[in-house]
Image 1 (cartoon, rainbow, N blue to C red):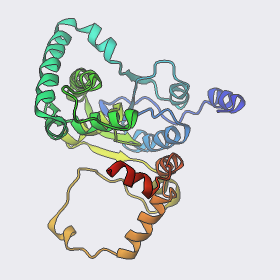
Image 2: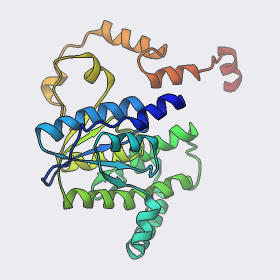
Image 3: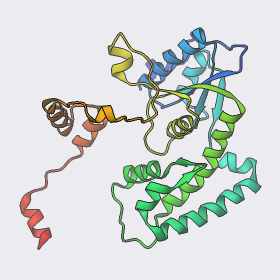
Image 4: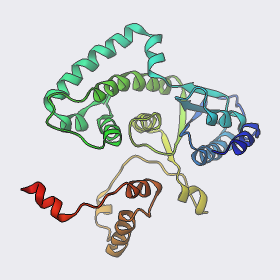
Length: 277
C-alpha cells in the first residue's frame, strides 16, 4: 500500500464504535486486507449501535497496521491469538495437548489421509478438512505413498487442540451473540471461529463484495449448512451453470480464480501420451 495512503488511514479517527455497558459480544476478525477490514467495521457498527453489542477483535497480528485501523474506529477490545503464547501460559495443559497430538498423528498416519480429513476433530469440531486445505494451498500436492503424514499435519493437529480449546473457552465464558468474518476456509482464526460458532448455533455473518456493496435489499444470513429435500427438487438452469463454469475456468469470477488462472500452464496431449508410455 502507498505510504501516503497508509499514513492517512493511520491518522483517521472516527468514533463509529463505542464501549457498551453490556456483556453481549460480537466477534470480528482481522483479514489483513483493507477492503474486508472496512466492511467488517461497518457491519460491526450496526450491532454496536442498534443491538448494544460490544465488539471484540480476534487477531494474530500484535502490531498490525490493520489493527490500528480497528482501534481508530473505536474497537478497544482485542484477543491476540498466538499458539506459542497460549502454550507458555499453561505448560501442564499444553503437555497433555502435545501427547494427544503425537498419538493422533501416528494414528492417522496409519489409517490414512482420507480418514484424517473425514474424522479428525477437537471437542466434536471437525477440522481435518481445513488442515488438509492449508497443506494443499502451501505445497500444491499430496503424496499418498508416504509412510507418515507430513510433519505439517502434526503441527496443525497440536495447534487445533491449543487454539480450539482456548477460543471455545472464550465462547463459554462470554455471551457471544454474533460472529462477523470474511472467509471460513483453510486453517485460520476465522475458520476456527466459524466452526465453533456453528457448534453453539451462534449467528455467523460472512461478508463479501456483492452482498454488502452492490445490493440494497440485503438481510444477514445464518450459515449452518442445511439442505432440505425440497431443495433437491428445485430445477436448475443448465445454461447458467455452464456460463458460470466457463467464466470460472477463464478466471473471471473472483480474485482467487484469477490468481489460479494466471498460474495455469498449457499441457500438450503428446506429453500426456509420453507419460502413459
